[in-house]
Image (cartoon, rainbow, N blue to C red; front, top):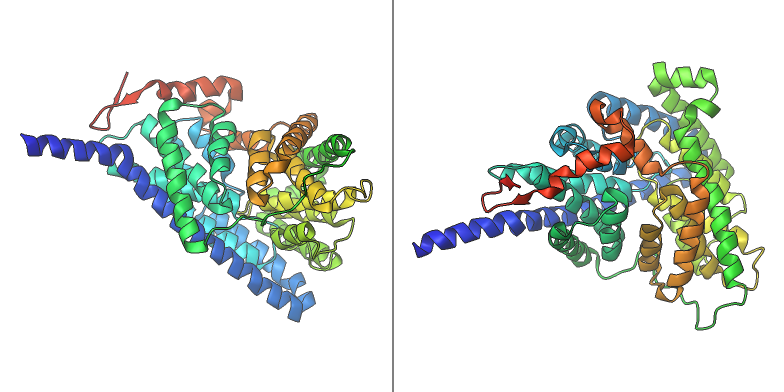
Length: 456
């Protein structure tokens, strides 16, 4: 009798916590491997680009064509950052949507094709893809439950996505906020424990393999703030909000600005269209002196520490390269490139606010542009705050994020939510997002018994 009770309790603990812990460990390991793979790919591209500057005119279009062909032929659902796919899974039937968007082949394709794209110098990041990879890893652990249900699957996806972002940036607090603000737009008390535990475990795995670090290091802004800080916050929020809003509008309204022949080429011959985008990215990269290739991490870090001196046109060129990288449908994220573009705008604004410290302006502009693109101001300022260890700037970062996200909303709706509608099941896709959410949220009224079954 005693052994039977112990066995039932062990099984219950395994289903409530053990599976989530196992998934979090896997997410942490894969996130570190993926980060190192992307770094290796970009360093390889830089070596080639330095030795053969004009090789990119051939390499980047060829890689673009190959990446789109592979994605469309074998890995449909892996395109883009991956966050819209996760949102679509969470806001619809997780079983039906997850088996389309969070499979092991898509996980593998996300990693391999984005690695190929970074080998070609595309302006992509790894953080968004890590969110989809983490969600896919956790979603497939549903098979370990004897009777899985929508609530369990939703919790697995949410925990995996948040753990993926936390491990990618080494920002555990941002992982929690991201899950609440961007992925679910709500807070469920019952899910908070497993969510936070998964984030902690994935973060510990990443820290154990990479050491204790902050993404951009620590900036020193001193104890005294300039008199024009409030003005700088407003101006930075408006400038980055305009830029981020335009970027979102460009991605969501391609039919209104891409010429008809190019739209026809994109529709009928997507591989050729991708190669053409590759040519544009290569030309922009050569014109910029190579600074627009890749995620832009080294450029943003160099600006923060005064070791990099970039042209005032850098943020606009980087934006153009980012649009060209996203249009063909190649797997790759926009988090890191957005931070780099924001850093470029901070560098430009230093010409106006010359009396302010450059790192302070760059931090404000990074959070402003990221908040404008994602329209998730809380997630944006928490990410940047953790990445630069900038707790002294928290109020300024919050204010900039709020201003920029409001300005961006004048141009386009939240980017990830708008893109997620393309992945919804037909019954949900036809309804407005506000109407689709209650249906998707209804399984949250369930609870789980000891056998892993749903009950009212």
